[in-house]
Length: 356
Image 1 (cartoon, one colour):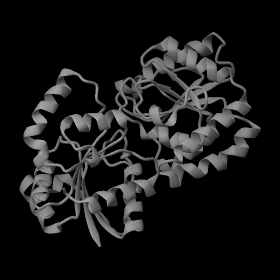
Image 2: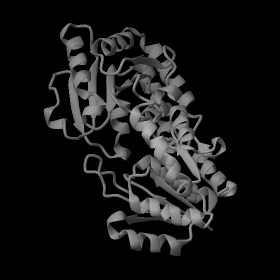
Image 3: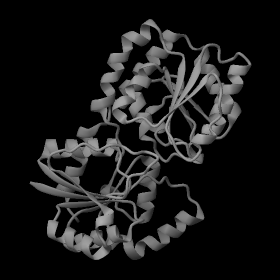
């Protein structure tokens, strides 16, 4: 049985679903070291055979290295380069010839900070990581600038739990065909980068002028801005919802909207596309490149621009319900092209490719 060591920051349900598929499909024993649970997203974790979760707080740098060396994993994966203890474990494994994978969702933007990172990377990256596993094309470009050989860069690290979300598209189809819910649904933490403030202002203005017709806006999530959330009769702030219960709100909603000012990827986009939702996304959302075809399954708008957002919502409101159903089914088709099976196969391919 192969062993894989994941050195992680915040674990999320979609990541754990991918690891679960890995251990089931490929007879792998997985060990996950993770940072403390984020209280803004306190996801519950179920026990799964052959997956062991270790808390980062249980280790100092010496004991973490000892644990990893005794485990002798066939691959080590680290989320980014923020934890020095994780980096040292990767260097130890790299010296032994074990594949070591850096995960990144940071897109290449060409700023001074990124060029400085590229310059510094040649001193430490080649002795730390053999592979990069990123989310999309802009992230892959950054990995290549950092010095990873092109054939050692993989895409598609973030993937929705299609086993959970894809069946919802069929489950909702008849209901939404009979009566399409005139509700925008936003699922995101209430933090400045997600753009809640101008979203609720934009929708409130449409509602107050009658342009929203009978549409509503529902928001799921919590965070530092939640107590300050804009209150309006047509806007509902639901709070945090465990993943297994989100479908109840999805069933009552029609169109997914994400107004992020900064969103390197956004797995939540893949999730709602898989569930058959038309999409309204800001141009700061990385996942739009894969899951949004303008006019066919949704609309894009300029991040932070309230008028641009309002125009995208107007387009949705003016669209016949039957066409909105069809747009959602197009989203589901796009989402089905990448799932946990592909993710697990990519990881096993890096083990097979080896260190070199």
